[in-house]
Length: 244
Image 1 (cartoon, one colour):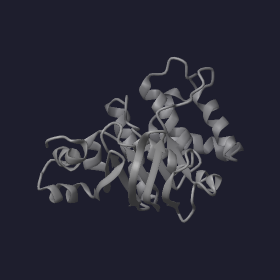
Image 2: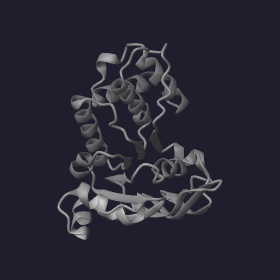
Image 3: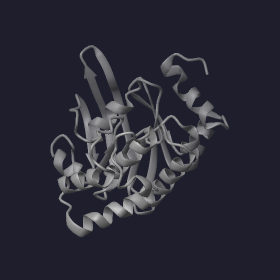
Image 4: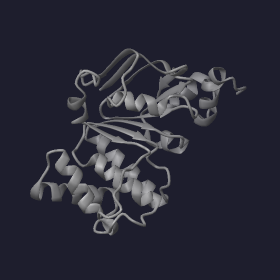
């Protein structure tokens, strides 16, 4: 389980997070929804220990990422908007490199690479060098790296951007299987269809504050609006100065 309480972060005069509190349960996919600039990426970086918070608490299975970041990172997969692929390495060579960084080796590593490749439907690029890969192919490889060491927690920053229909279906199938295995998944996304059909819980933030948390159905019931997209606009409208 991932839990935060009144987390705040400021960069100079800019307040990125002004008070974010939530719980993300194991065996669930939790959507992180918010307008651009709401603080979603900052929050994800705080969760993995890449940034230090100014105030509040963060607990990942009882461990504070600021106090013991390596313990947290051993059990977290983090997909950012920077993929970090190496054009001269094939997909398999790239995954071997990151697998070895995570203490994996030998036949078990090769088996895991094949498992992740099958899961994401990327066997056609497994032996190809990354140079010339499309945006969707790059995301697949980065996601494979994220899943390689079997993390119990996944932090995904807009994982479906640039994916075609078939790749998006493969991603959804992979996330559904990970949820079934008991993973705690937090996914920042702008795609309401994904949230409606895939996510068990939704955290809504605006201007660095938690606005609401609940299932898609609960958020619709709370606002009295049948469409999740319209319910989202209603929830963040006051915070953002928007007339819903």
